[in-house]
Length: 85
Image (cartoon, rainbow, N blue to C red; front, side, top):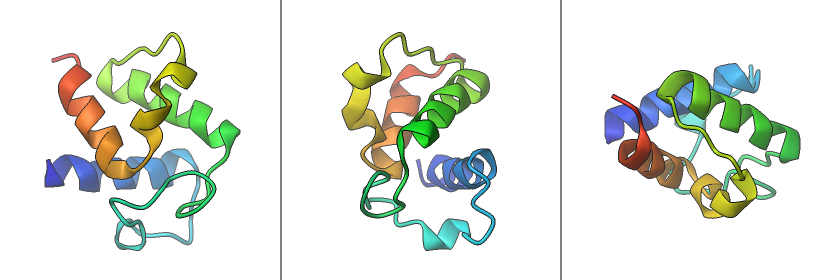
């Protein structure tokens, strides 16, 4: 799980062009939206695309999965449970 969390942090940085942030700067359990990393709805769309492209996970209604995007840890847990092998 820790390996996935680190990889996910790197992918988030790349996907969202967070050039001045390193994986160490992202708290695994901090909120991704508003507080914490301070992402917005456009960033949420980028994360949905990342899940589909990198892990084969399609979300028909991302709003129904809002809790998945709470933190890097919740996102990693969702990926572990739903990724296509």
